[in-house]
Structure formats: structure tokens, C-alpha cells
Length: 292
Image (cartoon, rainbow, N blue to C red; front, side, top):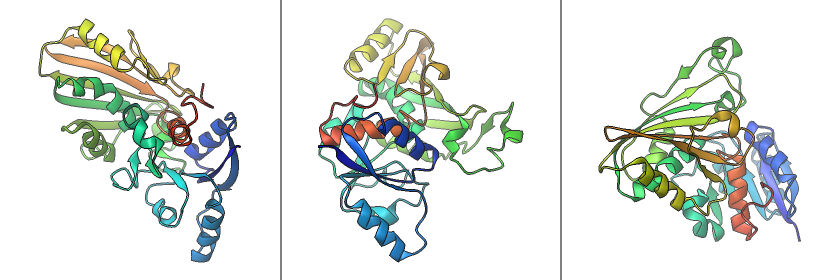
């Protein structure tokens, strides 16, 4: 029997991506789609009543809006916003680390797009206790800034331009540090492309490693991970756009500085397709169902 799915925020970039991808899933039925913010408490309660008839609800809302629903929804849910990534009542939804916890979770908080890109790029080295310090340079397509038109996302400003922002205090910096358990230095940029995200991580190593050892470490760690590709070459946006994969590669060392490049589609592996991975785990479906 198909599982009934609700989506709140289906008209945003991530919500539209969810709707598009879920149409290819053979084990679910889209039951309830809500795009508008409720006008009052009565309207919210009516929406929640309908959502509670679903088997799972995706919340694809701007930051700060999810918990109005979270506190009322009784069914299983996946929050794609940043609102609950540090909430102990939620499982952090990075399948490459927490698949067993996700399988039995009632509430899952989907990771941020930058956080996913950086954490997966650094995780094998971190577990190998090889990292001394890390500086991460992140660049994202304009869809990562959301659907609202702003001075920064305006075509006349961003065309032929790059915009650096949150130079030292981006919320994903805290998220990355929370998962890796060591300080990192991260600065994001918006670039004039629609979708795609690329991080260049400069890792100062605690121990001497050669390229062969590093590559073997990554290949072994991600050997059975369906959506992680380890590459010899340097990843690029063009090879990950409109796919559910993250690519990790580059791997060059100079004077104990290792450079790793990781890239994904911010609307898919950075958001919607990763949320579907989590849904598949929660329902006991094959992890790749509807995605490959």
C-alpha cells in the first residue's frame, strides 16, 4: 500500500523539487500540498488536521516557520529548514552517518546544503583523527538563497559577480562543527548560476599522509554509499546539477595541506533528494527508491 505524503511549502524551490522527484516514487502518493502561510490559528488547525492524515509530512519552509507545524503534527515528519538541526527531539538526517537512527525516527531534521557538502568531504579524515585545522570556501547557486527576490539575488547585481556573505558566522559553520566536533573556518559565496554548490576544503593535517592513503581512506569509507562518488579529478557543478549525488575529489597535498573539493546540487542532495533518502529509510524502502 502506498504511503500518503504531505508537503508544506511545495511552491518554494525545495518544495517544487520534492514534488518533481516524488512523482517517480512507486511507493508513495502525494495527498496534501500546502503552499500558503495560515492566516490565523483556525486555518492552521485545519491544515494540521489534514496533514495528520498523512503517513509522513515534509516541511519545506523558510527558516523560522517550521515549528508552528512541528508542535501540532502527530505523524512522522522531515523538516528541511534549519529550525531543528540542534533539537534533541529530532534525528539529524545525514544518511551516511545516521541511517539506523533515521530508520526509527519520528522526526528528522534535514541537514543544510553547505553542511552536507563539507561534512561528507571531511568525515573520513576526521574519523581518522588526521585533521588539525580546516578552512572551507563555499560557493552556491542563487537558488540556495531562496525564492524571494532581494538586492543580492537581483540579476543586475549578481550577473558577472560573486557575493561573499556571513564571513565568519554563517549558521552552517555551527552545524558543521556540531557534527565534526572540532572548530572549522567557513565563508560562503553566492555565484551567478541557478543551482549547484561547491566547497573547497583546505585541511592542515596532524600527520603525514600521501595521496594514495587519502584516496584509499575515502574509497573504503564510502564504498557502500549509494549517493557519494569519489573522483580522481576535481568535481564540478555541471556533473552534479540535477542529480542526487555528491562528488568528492581533487585530493592534492602540499606541505601537510590537503585540498579536497566537494560538489552537489543544493536542491537535491543538499535538500530534496536527501529528504527522500531519509523518507525511504523511515519507511523501510530501498534507499535509492525514486532517485536512481
